[in-house]
Each structure stands twice: as C-alpha cells, then as structure tokens.
Image (cartoon, rainbow, N blue to C red; front, side):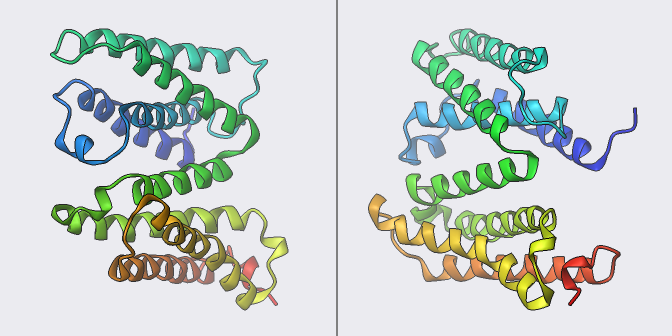
Length: 244
C-alpha cells in the first residue's frame, strides 16, 4: 500500500519521538526537567498525550477516534501497556517506578483520544501545538532562564512558524469562507497572532517576564510562514484563496 504524505510524516515523527521518550525516561532525570518548574506528573501527561496522538494517526491518519472500533481500544491498550513496562523498567535503571506516574500516563492517553474523537487531524494538531506552546512559554520556566536564551529564541521562531503553517493548512480546508488576498492575509494572521498575544498576556499570571526580543522573533516566524505559504499557493494550482 502506498503511503501518502501525511501518513509518512506522522510515521517519521513517531519514529523519532517514541525512542526519544524511551531514552528520556531511562536516564537520570535531566537538569532541564528539574529546572522547568513543571511537576513530574504534568510532564507525564504531556508526554503520553503526544505519544497517543502520534500512534493513533500512524494507524489512522485520516480518521477521528470512533469508540466502537476495536483499533481505538488496541491503541489505548498498547500505549498503556508501554506505560506499565516503562515504569517497571525504570525501577531497574536507577529510577523509581511510580503508580502516580502511570496514572498520569493513562490520563494523557485518554485525554488525547478524547480530543481525537472530536477533532480531525489538522484541528487536533492545531490544538495540541497551541497547548504545547502555551505550556512551554508560560507554565514552564525554561524560556526565562538565561542559560537557555538561545534555545528560547529558536523555540519562539520555530514554534510560531510551525503553528502558522498548521493554521494555514487548516484554513485551506475552509477557503470558501476567505475572500480575496486581503481576506486570506487577515485570516492567516489571526490565529497565530492571537495565540502569541494570549501567551504574552497570560505570562504575568505565572510570573513570567515579557521579552520584547522573543516577541519580535515569534512575530517574524509568523510573517515568514505566511509569506512562504503565499508564494507556494500563488505559484501552484492551490490558488483558490487568492481569487477575487
């Protein structure tokens, strides 16, 4: 069976993420995790949320979760059993097995499957990306630590570039509601710029400082993604959003 582009992309992402997650949970707790300011349980929820998301779309890249289908439960069982094995193996490599960690893993899996039962691929990917950006920007302290300033800058550029590209892909599915070039431009800018403003506006709640340079870098990433997308659509057959 020939794999389409989305399926290939998800399989590649899963092939990178799952081994990385296994490695991360079987080494001494990294200093990065200790300095993040996030609880261990929150990180488990996020990690297994992402894992279940990728596993589902690796199996069914074009379907929502339908609870009556056996493959939904097979995915849940497979990821949950991996979580059990992960905790048991940790007890043998110098890290403690924790029932509450497993419960956090389970919650992350069920939360992901719940989201995927409501939203399709692009909508779900948009929501997941926005949540991760918000968590890493405001809930975590990593973006505020001086020793990680370069990584914070890279994060702001890549994260907002990526979510803008995802948003534009989502928008293309509803291009009939976008009229003309100005309408496409405003629509493309709306969600990523709104997320950026929301993240920065919420930063004081978690006692996070406002960094003008990172804000500008994120804005540049948004603009770069829009310009590149406009050029691709303009010089390809996918130019419906530009018709007057």
